[in-house]
Image (cartoon, helix red, strand yellow):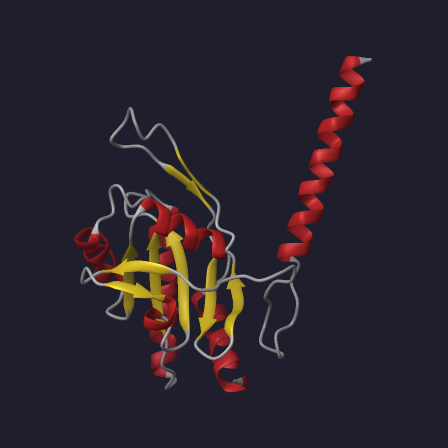
Length: 201
């Protein structure tokens, strides 16, 4: 009987998580410009530290259409691939006459100081901004974008990894959150949706 109750509880929790994910991430058309998300507010005010060491707000950072990505510089695979994809999308947009930028927000501020995020983003694109901050500032920004992250054995291992959400968010100064891109999105898909959002604004 106890086993049946436990299995039922797991099923209920799984259904609840599935419904929550559906409400947050179910694709919808955004002014004919691809897919975004429903289910509440994504994005909003944040206060972080940029790659010059200055404390900045979202208004200081998002001065033009911006591809925002949460990751960390020690990430072995996902973050560099996604950052390279976002950089390639910026190149495509620039070639078509669109102004856009990218922002890399670390979820590992203990290792990713100002110099580290600056050097990391410079490897990918001159219009990619590196952002760090205190643990509290990073957590607050991640919460705004519903980004999950968890440090693994950070106290015992200098080479620890960080589990984290791997979405890229398109945000504009005029409208805020406009779309998100999963890992599978190509540079062309990111660029096409971004250009469409810019044209529609």
